[in-house]
Length: 258
Ligand SMILES: Nc1ncnc2c1ncn2[C@@H]1O[C@H](COP(=O)(O)OP(=O)(O)OP(=O)(O)O)[C@@H](O)[C@H]1O
Image 1 (cartoon, rainbow, N blue to C red):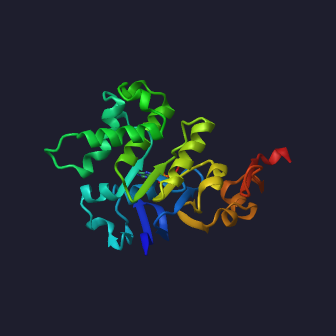
Image 2: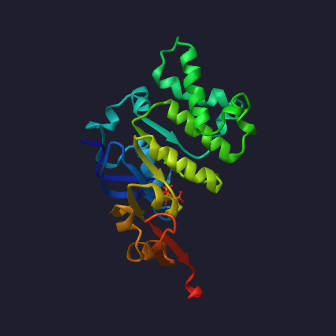
Image 3: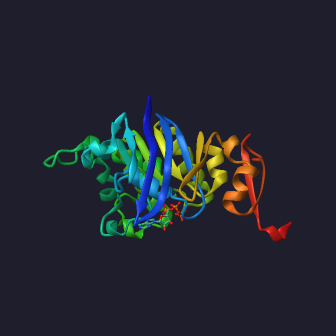
């Protein structure tokens, strides 16, 4: 059974079509990369899944139930998000930020237990931030803040993890660590990602958006080809093989280089 189902979803924002009749299904435990040029509609698609936007037409189902039937706390128990760095967290410590991941699982009067702190420390250790637990979130580097937000999402214990440009601020070591960690979670993940070669290494499947249309959907070998990518990204494109893995490696070049 599909965990997520998009059925001919159209989204208009300020009378402009941002997504046109997008349909796909996502199975449990699939790690999907959402790729496409700037403005293709990737963030908008992720916002639909967080119920921040409502489809103009069509339907989104989570676990066979229309998304709009979920209450906010119900949705937060199922879906966690790591998005671009939020400004409103800056007065808090790393520990405070990460513990926010437990909010959907707690009653109003419930305080943080010893078991919660243990879980917190496990997740901080996973993202390499245990030693920064008591530091102000604002004093972390961009990459450390991104990893703290991942720890918060993991503490939320979601069935679906949404990542919007998760490797933006990360150095190569943490880019791979973040992707590896997300893959190893064994839950469904949709990651919007510009680095096609990182996506190639870790994703089971790619969804390619172009001008709001889903123009390709399949395994990395099927989507990361010159024929598919060159017209969408408007750059010369050569695809060869990653020297470490049997996965496609994409090379883009300016037309004048040839
Ligand atoms: N709140 C909004 N109101 C009107 N138009 C919007 C709004 N948010 C996004 N858009 C438009 O929707 C289109 C898709 O934007 P979106 O942010 O989803 O693209 P994206 O694929 O995530 O792009 P990028 O790779 O640049 O982050 C763009 O043309 C954008 O201008």
